[in-house]
Amino acid sequence: MTDPISHQTRIAQSNGAVRSTLDKLDKSKGTQSQAEASKASAPKPSQGDTVNLTNVQQKIKDAPDFDRSKVESIKKAIREGNYPIDPKRIAQNFVSLEKMIQG
Image 1 (cartoon, one colour):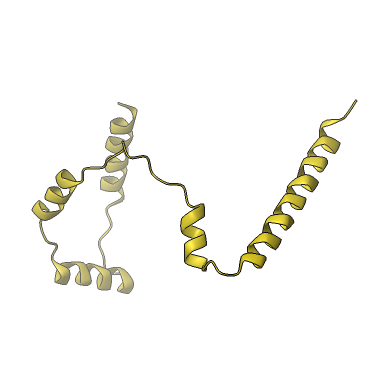
Image 2: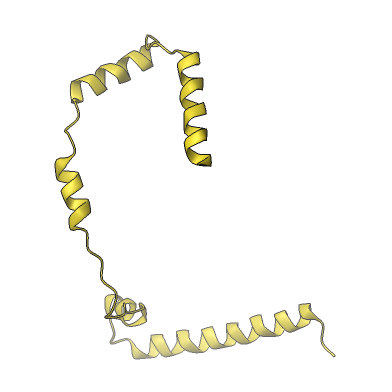
């Protein structure tokens, strides 16, 4: 009869032995470069899976550019402590966000 802890210890020890054997084999090969080894060990994507990002790409192109000078002026006002903060408005926005999240 074995307890779970000693069983896990034996598994860890056997994994360590396997790992050291694999390390020795890798060192003995010496001809395979690091990049080739990582390519060989990386999982290969299945041929049936595809991703189509044309919709996302179009949304990015259609997005309006931001006003860099306005962003910089807001950053400056925050740093200097001059940016107006309306706690009531912030609270109302949090409430509407919570309602949107809850459905």
